[in-house]
Image (cartoon, rainbow, N blue to C red; front, top):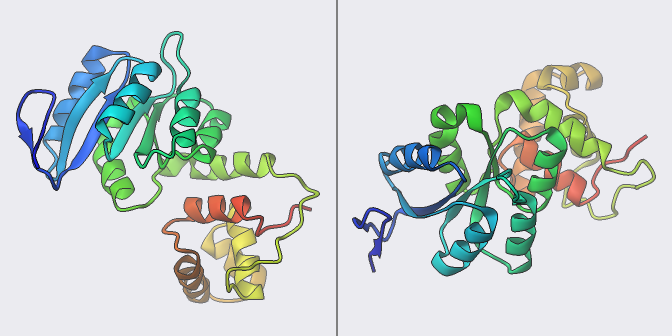
Length: 230
């Protein structure tokens, strides 16, 4: 059954339905026009603050929520907590200029993507397609910093879980190296293997864990205690 978009035009039932939550009307308008120009996407609503974002997410059940983490007097992280507690099936992409600790907390609360507001118009289509495909999406230039921030909140006393999800000992060591932020070249040098072999191991790891990117792998490893801190 067709739904109605914010401009009154019927949206295709098989399109990805997006809710935009941001306190700047001009920014929302630009984002709405961008999304509606993308094949397979439609805007089903807009919200001016986090409270309205939570309310409309529960009412409209969008596929993706674009959520500004910081609006005057608002708290985007609290909105994520509320949606997580209600087991919402909506995937959230946070719009932010926030520091890395906030971004890490957003990811831990279930956000699937991070888009910096100053580059939103350029990267949003790629982010939307990635998240709709079930992947995480973050700006490439912030990936290393996010992994560093993730590491900083893992206790050194934590030991690796007994459950290894079918990973070999070599694969577990490569996972640890990825979480530490090492490139394929670095990992190849550490274990005296070729970069091709590293890629082969990572492909096997991705398949076994059901992840699609290095960030998603790092989040999975940390959340399931697959790595040790020295």
